[in-house]
Length: 159
Image (cartoon, rainbow, N blue to C red; front, top):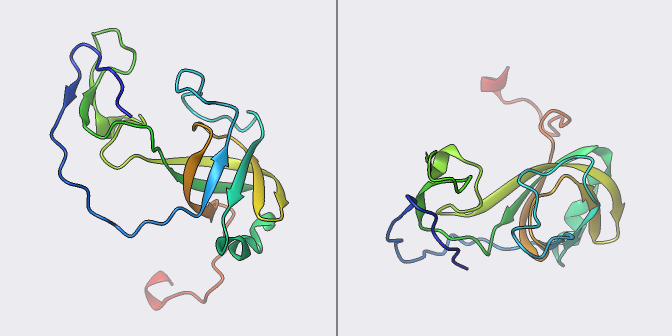
C-alpha cells in the first residue's frame, strides 16, 4: 500500500520481487487499524496484543513461557518499499536515509519489537510493547537475548 510522498522524499525503482522462502508463522492482533493510530515505538506498558501462531508452528511455543521478554519479527505488509530518503516529521527540513530510521517504509519491511510476555495461551501469546497494525503477519519469535541461555554446548570458538 503506497502512502503519499512528503516534500523532498525520494523513491527508487524496485527490482522484481524474489522469493526468499519466507513463511508467515502467525498473525498479530493489535488495537490499531490505521497507521496514524499506531505508536511510533512500542512501549512495555502499552496495551495487550495477541500473537496468534498458525499450525504447525504452535508446538514451537513450548518453553517460551520461561522468558519475561521476547523479540518479535513481523512483515510490515502495508508499507511502501521504494523510499530511500524520508522526512519523518513531514516538516520539509530534516531528511534521513531509510537505513538511518526505524520507519516501516523500507526495501524489506521487516519490523522488530522487544515485547513483554503477559501470558501464554494455547496457540497464542499475549504481549505488550508492539507498534504494528492489526493483522500484521508474524515472521518469527525469539527469546530476549539478555535472558537467553544457550541450550547447546559452547562451540570451541565461543570459549
